[in-house]
Length: 206
Image (tube, rainbow, N blue to C red; front, side, top):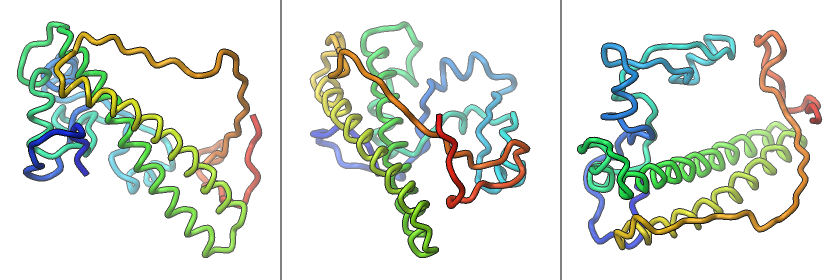
């Protein structure tokens, strides 16, 4: 799926690429050592399991660091060329594109999160785990609600990008003057980072 701006005339071309969330030619290259940076990201679920659920620092090339598969080759190159192919000088266009890419990244993650929880929900249903199914359902609804908010943000940013009005003042304010919240934490691993917590086990209220 390519997150190209809505209304962009050019059709997608090429494969979906690993788009950088942090400027490769600027931020990443400046902190890199011999073309590599440190990351806590495990890289794969297999590695995460092999490390007993512990996040370990590892080195990764800046080509693969801080990326997500959100754009096709054509639109990744076209939309973010002012960031990746020009020196960063903090122009309104470059500042806008940093914001645009961050919102696209979050929208991508929310959609992926909702899809993953849908799979978990189906698995819990087949296992006969009603608490697990309910938990996955509520998580999926939350991810979808967040995705809808981000979709509205992205639509506004798409309009600005297509118009080229990068100095437009953007102000998103929560609709609530005063708010309170409560949450719960459901650990995936025990305190020794060795045993996965089953969906049927009680969550820890917080």
